Length: 77
Image 1: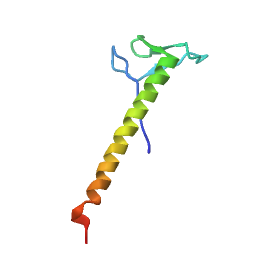
Image 2 (image 1 turned 135 degrees about the horizontal axis):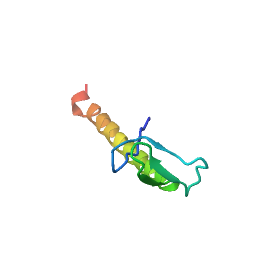
Image 3 (image 1 turned 45 degrees about the horizontal axis):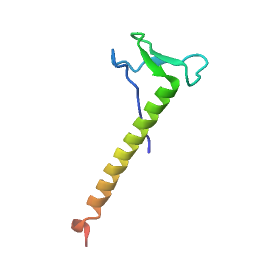
């Protein structure tokens, strides 16, 4: 299952940001378009993980619904 996630700047909506050179968890992440601070590397990682889990759960739910439809009484031969 492939999951795509993005963090968007709350100020301008851009998903264009840079990580600090050291990329330590306490390093600041800023939007490349408007300069707003998006949080720390650790906060960014946590948000990406939350999004990945949410998208994965939603995808799994859709797949299970699709399987249930295909295994329903209309497929009985």
